[in-house]
Image (cartoon, rainbow, N blue to C red; front, side):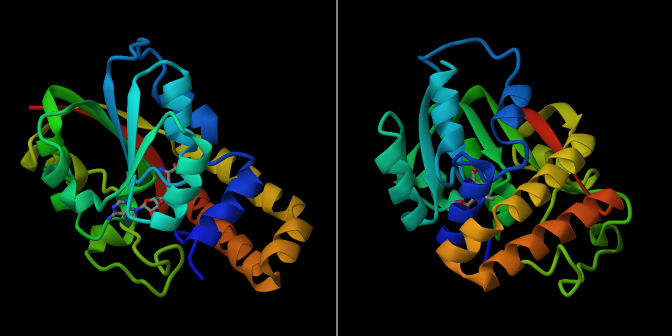
Length: 251
Ligand SMILES: C[S@@+](CC[C@H](N)C(=O)[O-])C[C@H]1O[C@@H](n2cnc3c(N)ncnc32)[C@H](O)[C@@H]1O
């Protein structure tokens, strides 16, 4: 059982009442892109787009022509059948530059980067696919002071790091990594307080949807989903993790 599997994302979409697998759903997208001008000519890439709700929202807001990529073919099938205006492709974030070079004006990721096994490679590949002066926006979990990153040892037995593929952004090391891979950091917005409120709401919604989850997927899935997000909420509340949006420009 994994949240980052097709049924995991399906359950999240049911609970969140939209095809989103990031905290804050449409509100978060609107907060992050507030001030962005409408421009259907802008070429936009959504990396780790999941079920496609964010790509569809960006398209509907008129912020650009959106391509969505994800490594999970089953999830992309669902996205492609619902959002026909979006060009969805099955692709590993670590191979983007093999498909596109100097193409996109804006590349964004909502809670996908933390799951990449090779984050440095993904940043390099996004750099290859970006036009000169293109923008990169990464909205994701952060490991704040006291995070296992600070000691250099991630204890994967302790929640939430016990989940597979969990590497939140380190407030000190991540800006360095951006610079090393050709990205100039322009703005960092801390969303930790909003994450706390959003995860509290998510835990409440999971409880409210218990019957639907159990009847559609079984009691074990319900227990797993609830435990996962209660652990995540606790980790945010005690400051082990948070959330932020990083804006950078292709140097
Ligand atoms: C938590 S979901 C977020 C989905 C979407 N961005 C959203 O906000 O709804 C993370 C997504 O990253 C995708 N992903 C994980 N590793 C990937 C990789 N190496 N390349 C592309 N996508 C990847 C997963 O399949 C999953 O759909």
